[in-house]
Length: 384
Image (cartoon, rainbow, N blue to C red):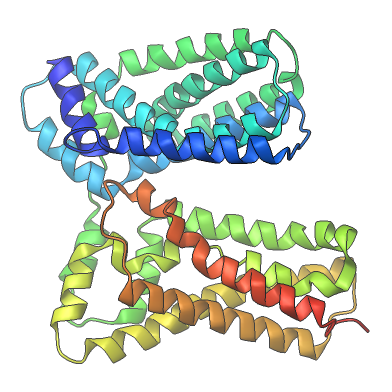
């Protein structure tokens, strides 16, 4: 039964013939070899690399566990007779394999190519990836007691940050991984199922539609999307300190470009197939949807840019009215391009929502904004 369940989830995540695995492996090898022969080196402490891989793997794993599309698949599987422990471990194993092989593998290829590694560090990285998968699944199954999960995560992050450079770091990771297995041993398949709230059901049943109401409830009904937006606001707060250290006032436009990388609000049609079908089939929806959607993305971008400008003025000073105008310009251009991409080139070949978050298309608009910011910086428009 466990083997059949694992095979069913594997085909869902990796394709009917597991075609995603060799393609992903080939991309990882190309990226690794390209960076390796380029001779680019970046020194980073072992603790930072372990924390980076752990946080990234845990983030992807959490997204996979929270995926609505994955929840529908899980609901169908739970309707069949199943053995609780076998079901839980096969489900966690397949999602963990998806997170490590298709997502973390790319990050690991980059880190291996640009850093010098010892054998013990590579072993520690492998252990930390397995630990991240198990601990994330355990915390997710206990999300009813979210405060305990937050405390558990904070403690392990401190342990990795403080002792990640020690050769014995694998021991506490293994011990904590076993601790997570004990929680999963007692978990039931329904611990991973997202129960639909009455509020979200009522939202979809409303007869009088409002796009603005939908946009904001779209965020409030997806807590991880709100978390991503909050992270961007935190980046906007701290980025002025680092940009000032690099080049001073002239790199302010680069901050606006970086803050355009807010994936959740830019995949509205891609992640909701029912909404896309309704918008495209109903008459007159192109204008009624695209303009409010563009303004919604603009407001989200402008909020992050405003926090960035206020933080810069507080820490460094020198913000002018011209910079505020350029912030509006960058926010509007980013919103317009994101809306056009989502309307004309929605992402359809995805298995779970994590594929949307990490799709290469997410970098198209930020890269274009970075090029524009580079041109503005080169013209030295913002120098006093």
